[in-house]
Every structure is written in C-alpha cells, then in structure tokens.
Image (cartoon, rainbow, N blue to C red):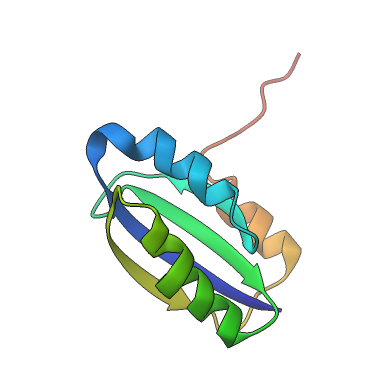
Length: 96
C-alpha cells in the first residue's frame, strides 16, 4: 500500500466544500484543514503509483476550487504507535 500526502491550496471561502468533495474520492482516507502555506492536506492510501496519478491529475482537477497542489509520496510508514504519538502531540485527555 502506498501513502501520499497532497498539500492543497483552495479558494478560502470553499475550504469546507473542497474537504467534503475530497472525502468522496476513493483512495483519499483522511482530509485535514491546516494552517501554514497550504489550506488542506489529503492523505491517500492506494495500491499503486497509477492510483496516485489518477487522483492527483484527474480527480483533483475536477474540483474547480482547488488552486494548486503539492504531492509527497511516502517511502515508508513507521509503526502505528509512532504515528499515533505523532498525531496526538498536544492533546492530552483530562481525567474525569
């Protein structure tokens, strides 16, 4: 399974609309609105490079509110525990 991260710039007033459209595309597993140089990051998990190509060069082009993209393909996924710790930085559960 290949993983890719697509950094997306969209029209500012359309970020929520774009995220919902992205979630309808097969192969896009997660979508985040983010701060910084990009508005949205989409995480792809697909079986082949061809699938990444189809999503990025065909499916994303069908969303007119997307202004630009930058695609990063992962070489290796690290352990689930490492990934969970990375995504949970700054989020501690409160004791009830």
